[in-house]
Image (cartoon, rainbow, N blue to C red; front, side, top):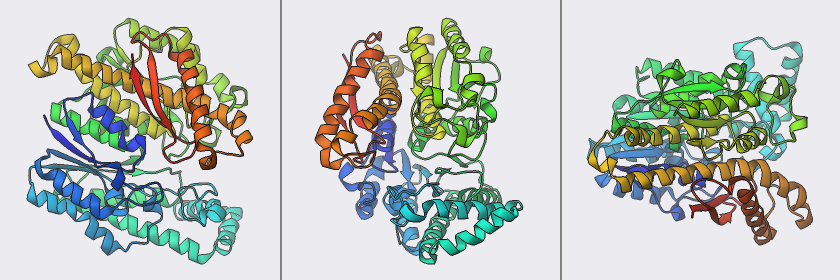
Length: 527
């Protein structure tokens, strides 16, 4: 049994628990640090304790899967807030070289984000001044990069000149200087890959756009990767909270010598060419990155493979993509360029042929599409799919569903063919693997669709106003909000998933990890 030591990006379930849940449906042993040392949102992890834990855990490990953001800054949000020098950051990352020298046979897989520039005035996960100047900093970033790559119009140049006057210099300097330090660590990580200390490196672009600091830094990083001749071990593409799952899938495929082919089918003709919100490239290019990073390849035809990834795709770029708003208020393309009936018929046909079907639900942001899920329920298909995700950004969704799909497909292939070693083919082991896979599948449906698309919207509209609460302000009435959450989640689960073939879904420990409505944590069992 191979031992994987995993240091997550932060303490939220998507980063801490999802990879563990995927690992439970394998014969890999995953070791993670205690939550107590990992910090809490803006409070950074105890990086000294993290270092000591990593040194100890690495002693008998086969693979290290390491978030450099956690190792150096103490988490994703602290990476946007710190005042560390480049020298101190390099000292903290040096533990990877120490481990490699002590255990030359260990394989180190690492990831480190290109810091985002959100287009909003919120300080929830950013420096305090972002509440007042966030939108301006984003536009300054956007226009500065655009001026270097293309010509600005007179109006745009005037706007850029005005932004230089409006944004307090100390705030802009703080933001830019922190990016410079983080960028320095990214470049140092490339050198560690060149030296063979890091065997596989992913540098994801956290929420980004066509122009801005992030795509400019991405270009620098890719050019440097080419100069160092390490493109065979480095990938740079949009993503963040799903990378732990993606890299675990890559590790799994390496250990099993497995490279599945996956056919990708879209619900919209325009889907492959759309630039999703929070990303800088076409959807199909992102999917190619996620497949490659996870250890798979894209099949040319559905006849070539038993694996089909259905991508419920938007038909409009960026700003036109729907969040969780009423169906009637969506962009017109949702009524003319997405064929709901056809994609469900196609999914049913693939299933009839005995193929495994996964659904990447990215037509809307921050939750699944109720129109599609309702149609799947009407056709009795909700418990027929192999994998599902529909949370937050397109990259978050795709990385999660692809990783799950790849890992379980390996075992389903052996279940069908009887190939593999005796341990893998043990009935008890295969039953346990399938059960963990089904639990993860329903976990995603429960959170990405039932919570993010339905219950969250219901609570925001009908429950929080009466408690003098809002999206980010629930701490003063947390017990009441969590009680409402539990009641509504259990009711919705009974409505949508009450007749699944596996049994009855039971939820427990429903809570808000960061004391806000954005995400939930919970335990799921199937009776």
